[in-house]
Length: 258
View 1 (tube, helix red, strand yellow):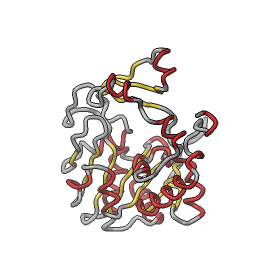
View 2 (cartoon, helix red, strand yellow):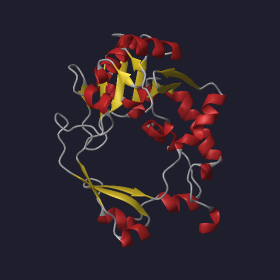
View 3 (tube, helix red, strand yellow):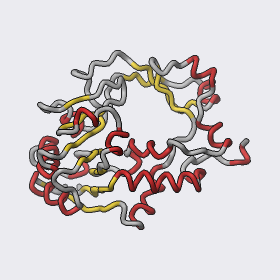
View 4 (tube, helix red, strand yellow):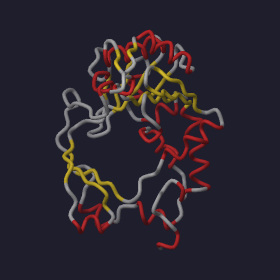
């Protein structure tokens, strides 16, 4: 049985500062508590470390995507139509609903002083002077020139990567594979359903280019690889790649399938 590292709040603070997180920073965080190893003080120690590093002038925002969805099995007809998953949206109470995005985020939104957005399925939670603005969506973190910190997770978990898709004129053969047809939009109203349709973009394809250009910094804290990037630089680079080589991000979308 592999031994796990034991780390403290101080270890996490030191690691984050080494990575380049600074006092006054505005940072979005995706995380996995278990990837650190054993954290003395658990999720609270990670949150305390993060808030200590950015200080009272800084702000942190995390996904607090709620568990008010019921995942349902697809019918053969739905699979054949291109639907990859479907979930029914249940009534949402942001003051009570737990978050499925990990122990750290589920602890974070419950903190005194934390704000949680009202989105029925993808609410963000934030602490700090910019909290009220940040819970409105990842686009606010981008507008505030914030950073993204990935604690034990990768770009595959980075929801804000979708911001780069705005303004991209994807080829028709890709749009046809990822756009929910009108008849399905009528059948599955967005207020009642979450529907996955067609290939999902593979954000991990940007890991190498980000590191090669120095956009993303990495360090190890305990057993966890922690990544830090300025969101604007990350989005701009992904936007350029997506515009030039969209097919590498949408596996299964090929021109001869038209």
